[in-house]
Image (cartoon, rainbow, N blue to C red):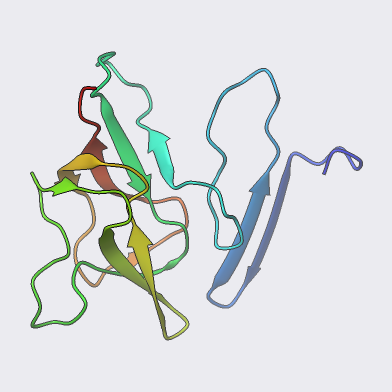
Length: 136
């Protein structure tokens, strides 16, 4: 992307989307997360009025698909509001092209709010959960 002076490269085909965004080195923003990226879907809420270490973070969808809060319709949700989650814990699944992809926590936190209704389509980068990191 540097070589060709590209800022954004986006490719869409049926239910698959890839979006690459080159960032300027002077900023410290998290990268855009797409189906082909291995970047973290945890991005700070913009703008944040709370400057404490426990300020809310947004967990974003790493891909486009259908959001499910539970492994099956008769099962309880993986997480609900006010739950304390541990790193590696499954938060939800996103179905993309008949494959159920588990979305896992990358750090310990508390679920503040679930932002998507069960069974709804989501886009890559869409906010799924508002979480709060515990004070250290």
